[in-house]
Amino acid sequence: MDEQTTAKTELLKFVPKPDRPPIVISHGIAGWLKKHLFGGFWNTLLTIAVFTLLYLLIKPFLDWAVINAVWSAANRRECMTVSPDGACWAGVIRWFNNLIYGRYPDLLQWRVNLGFGIGIIWALPLALKRLKGKLQIGVAGVVLYPFVAAYIFLGGERGDFHYLVFCLGLAYLILLYIDVALVHTRGKKLSQVFDRYLEPIFGKRSAVASFILIMALITVLCLYIFRGVELEYVSIEFWGGLFLTVIISGFSITMALPIGIMLALGRRSTMPVLRWFSIATIELVRSVPMITVLFMSVTMMPLFFPNTMDLNKLAQVIIAVCVFAGAYMAETVRGGLQSIPKGQFDAAMSIGLGYWQTMFLIILPQALRAMIPNIVTSFISLFKDTTLVSIIGLFDIMLMARNISIDKNWFGLHSEPLVAISVLFFVFCYGMSQYSQRLERKLNTSR
Picture 1 (tube, rainbow, N blue to C red):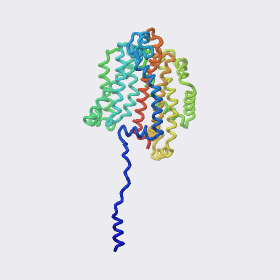
Picture 2: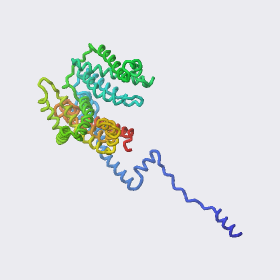
Picture 3: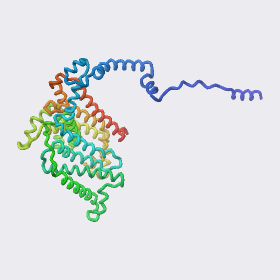
Picture 4: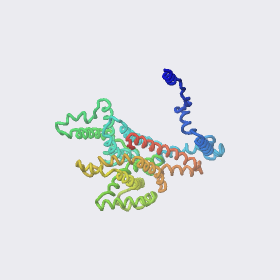
């Protein structure tokens, strides 16, 4: 009995638990700093060393660029008088309009803003989730928008074909936003509203017929409205600055992927002529620097066209840059195609899909999704490489920045314009990089 009582007493005996560890702050600014910057002795020491180095490097730049800078002056001599050790941003401010628009006439620069505004408006519906047919919108933008932008930027007397395509592009844009409004209110596009009235005549093709009929009516309306409107002609020689850089890089980025896909598929083709032509184009272009391709396009390309054809320097440069970018993009696409397992091809063939259906419905969507980082890296590099066109005489943003230093009022002003355009390039390239990361997360490319 005593043994049982003793056992129960021992079981009921209080045994204190060990002390709890101190609370670790793992949230908020303090938690983030402790986890990433001051997590240990060596981590703290490294953080202090890095911040000390950054201070020693950044402080002189801030003193030059901000603290001792001159923001308002009539010329560089006045800047040197006010603050000889500071940056002279007054010259950049005076030339900022030229850095953006080049030598485009001041009173007509609204046309540049309008042209790019139309491009942004055209691209906005691609971000709407409820709107379908985004591939059609993108293809229409690639085909029609250049004609609309060229009509606005150039002005002057355009040919009947150019005028017709310009009105067709405006008609598509108007119909696009009518569809956006109807989809978000009634859930149907305008062509679907009139579809039932045309179904007895066209049957299954009534939706296409309704779309074509509405497009034709809006195009005729645009032709009637703009028939007497003629914009003042602005020669391409006056185009420049960031405006010209965006045109060259935008057109090249748009065409690089289709050209790269065609060359990559041609290199994998079983047709000897197509395969060797693609290989020769890719290897020849990738074996020479971009500046060589630009010089060859300006000097040799006119030899391959009739004497009656007036091929301006901008068109030659755009063709050269598109081919150069397409050759590099072809190898990126080829690497993506090789990453797709052969079983995907066999599965597509087993259900009766042809070569083009297999490529554009099964293989390329998977390959392009995996190639997003490489594609965007190529686009960023291409955007920066377009500054080379200044060497052949096009007044892009780089050449306009150099012209500041030879202005009689700002003679010798070199560093400030380069810093200014570096900031502009950083904004564009960082925006492209962030968009690609957002697209990767949306498509879940890691799976």
